[in-house]
Picture 1 (cartoon, helix red, strand yellow):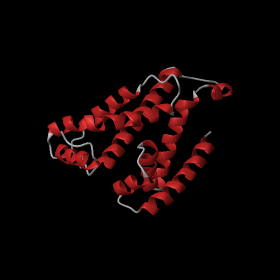
Picture 2: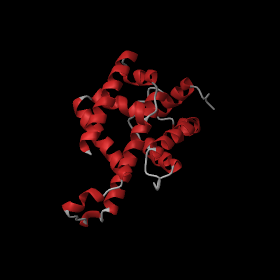
Picture 3: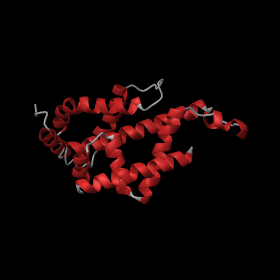
Length: 190
C-alpha cells in the first residue's frame, strides 16, 4: 500500500491515469477521509434537513471520478479540486431537483404576489452561488477556478497555486477579488 503522503497519492493517481485500475483501489482509502471532510463542509452550508449525507455525496462523486477515462492526473491537489467540482455539481443538481419538486415540478405556477414565499434559502443560496460562479467564469475563468478550489475544494493558497501553476501572490490577489465580486453578485441577485 502506498504511503499517505501527497507524493504517494500522486504516484497512485499517475498509475491510475495510465490505466492501472488496482491503483484506484489503493488510492481511495488514502483520500476517502479527505473527500468525506470536504463533503461534510459542503453539507454544513446546506439546509439542515438536506437528504444527502456526506457518505452519499462522496459515493456519488466517486462514481463520477472512476468514470474519468481521459483524466491526466497531476497530483493530489488537482484530484481533490476535481472531486470538489464534482461534489458542487452534484449538490447543485440535487438542489435544482429539490426546488423543482417543491415547486410542483414542471407544472408549477405561482402568482407574482406569492413569488417571494416560494423557495427555501439554503437551496437558493447554493444555486445563487453556482450561477454567480458561472458568470464569474465567463469574465475571469481563473478567478472562478480559484473559488472552486479554495472554497469548495478546501485547498490552501499553496495547493491552489500548484494546481493552477501560478504564483502564491496571484492566487491571493485573485482570491480576494473573486470573493468581493461574488459577494456583490449574490447580493444583487437577492
